[in-house]
Image 1 (tube, rainbow over the protein chains, first blue to last red):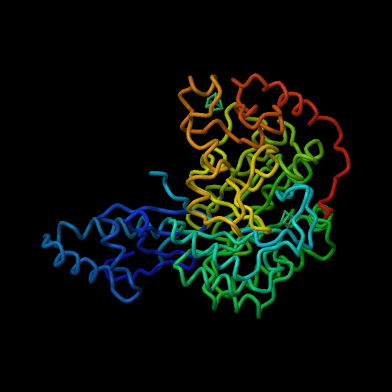
Image 2 (cartoon, rainbow over the protein chains, first blue to last red):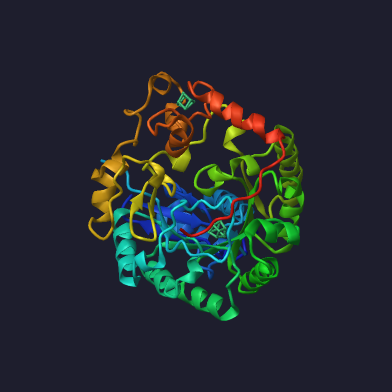
Length: 89
Length: 358
Ligand code: SF4
Ligand code: SF4
């Protein structure tokens, strides 16, 4: 993944809000991840249209955070999920 | 508060064109006439979603034997449930697959009996099955549906583990599951024909480890080791009534699919009780939940919240008591029965007893 990649969930992967547990859930074949708040904020912006750059911009605005500070974290987290077959670009 | 279940195992039917001698279905199979109808299953899905279930595994038997499978998948999707189809693939057609995908199916787990065609068809008891399974895998990949390929392994096919993993990769699977047979239901009846020797197990484990780096990043390899060769049991079902709720074809709610073997336990029917009530209050679900029921060797053990005392059905099968610690554990007073079964794994295997209806 690079900053201009457009990530989307791989087939068989779904991200949804879990009302019963009041938390986001990432559902994959025979697996279930409960991402932490920070990861959930990033994943909510993955829609198959936004690039990683655009996701970073949106987060920076949303949390009033310095863009340079979060860009590396966003890319690393999305890359990690891609390595595990959960995201594609 | 009792934590809600994560997943529902919906055993839609016990009907199946195959006859695997390790089938996890009970020896007394539910009849087609006793199966829950479409509305009954939809109600189960509604209640499961309300309770907090996130994933539904449609299994059987062969769930494709139900003509309302597409309708049930669509219903699950409407409830935002993640749906997984566990199938032998022998009746999958392009049209049926397209209908399932349109209904919102998320993932398919396709089972194979072996890589060697003659061996596979002997184990599954169905001629021509392998070609149909290979075609099913091709259709699934062509539709870009996430695919897991599953092999149940035992002494009659375990020598081929390397080839099994290679076949799964060739078929484009994202995951392959190499699962040693579990000994309850038909598997227990066939134990002496299926239990691998220590040497066989070692070779299979080495084959899995050798394959991991080859497929890293492209295909995940899940390896389920056999209980009997271990000295500590697995956390069966992630702990009794902690993560899963299983509904049998006739509508009985079970904490695991083999639970019906426990003789003095009443399994509530979803025709009469709501899933929430069953999960939180029924004797079947509360009796072995947590640690309070455990025998002394578990009570004093540091691992009791890791393996939850192991499998209740295995305790029943080997120790004659579902409330005993799992005899796979070296601290169980009945561990000798596991060692005796292992000693038999070097003798020539008896003939297979095929799964059959009563
Ligand atoms: S294990 Fe074999 S016989 Fe049992 S349901 Fe699966 S395919 Fe059918
Ligand atoms: S004594 Fe009980 S809790 Fe400890 S390892 Fe054995 S089965 Fe598990």
